[in-house]
Image 1: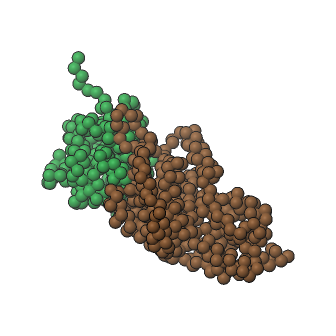
Image 2: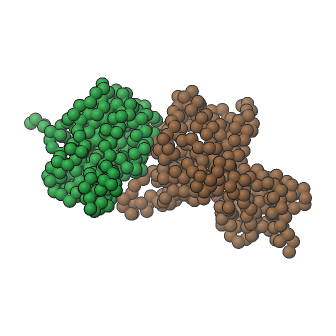
Image 3: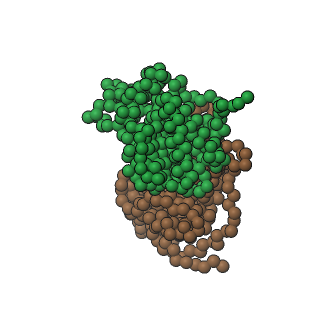
Length: 356
Length: 251
């Protein structure tokens, strides 16, 4: 039985990646995720891997592109302004169909914003982020243990679909310490993929990692192929937790840190006689639209709670498709919502939607 | 019958999309000959830029990755670190390397990244239709400097080989021209030496190749070769600016 250890979120992500077989990390310092590169700079040399501090986020993501194209497990991490800089590279990685893990410990924006936790990067994480038609698969963990489990899973998913996968955390999740159990590193021999550009030895045909399709017909076909992969992920990869939704009048929808607060708010509201439930998307891309649609049949109203001005709420509305009203409560700027404020919002909505 | 010439094995036997008189074809051939001579085709991974050489992978017969604009040294770094036994080269133009990718090339050199960079300096943006490059000469007319590049407005053209030669991690830095058989012979030796530097583990290597762009210069091919020699070489002196054994030499 693996031992329980107290781990900081950022370091837990890094250790989980190492145990998943990731041996290459390219990054650039930015608060609040510096424990990830710092940990990797100590840890990767111990296992024969490479940590390299790049000259910029732009360079780091392009190093990820090169290493992923060479067929190895590779990752980078950053926080919001740094992720903006990586978006060019993420678009190329998506276009060239390369697997990798990108961790975003989100901080407040726009611009330089602040360094406190936020969820205002939802749009750039799940709606494409860079240019062109593509999606990343995006996980939104809500505990240190879940960050460990999803990080280990993320590399498999990235390789299964040959797509970039993003871990969407925030400053709270990165900095908090919780007891975690690391699965033992599976002693598996990771095979080099049959598309990797690692030298055309033994007479094999040469290979190309590329995202340019200069003929419109070819680019059209390529886009259909990318879209088909994401459609498959929408079928097979959606993860979502629902709590107390069966009898709920008001259903909170939240991911990550705000979902943790919503869970407390839900318990408090229930103890006060309000029937409140919770939908917690674990994948925010692909989004659990069907879960929202199903819950919309019985719920009186949704309340999306985000540490932003309202981004995921748009997907909740798409899922509900008018079957139930969708309300929003947001705390941008690095503020974590309080359970009391969420209960107060739920009570107001209950009065308006249920009381009438 | 004695064979006096053959297409290098590291090149695919096909026509290129390059304009008549363009020197990309010569540079491709010299790189391919170096790869052949070293017998490393089956462990070479090339990195193509954004620009006229974006389709370089259609001509080289080895594994390739296509990089975003200016980022070829970063992509090559990722490949290099993942594949310690590979021979890794990036092929970049002057907009790609000296403008948008200035940070990536400097830091690859700083790290002494064991890659070889072939830098095509033709003093203009070719693929996009002849705009001013950071290497465009003062007075040179382009589509974005229609009255000629003005010193007080756009500054002096950047001398990449000299700049990189100040960086300790840059083990081999040379500038050559592709404008005559004699220059091409010297260019071939420099490119071979750059790959030798990489294989010896000595550090970063770069060969700047003064090149022509007859189409966007608005000249016939021979006229372009003459223009290169009369205008570019005086501003961009040829020679080895840094060698693994130390020292520098002209021509």
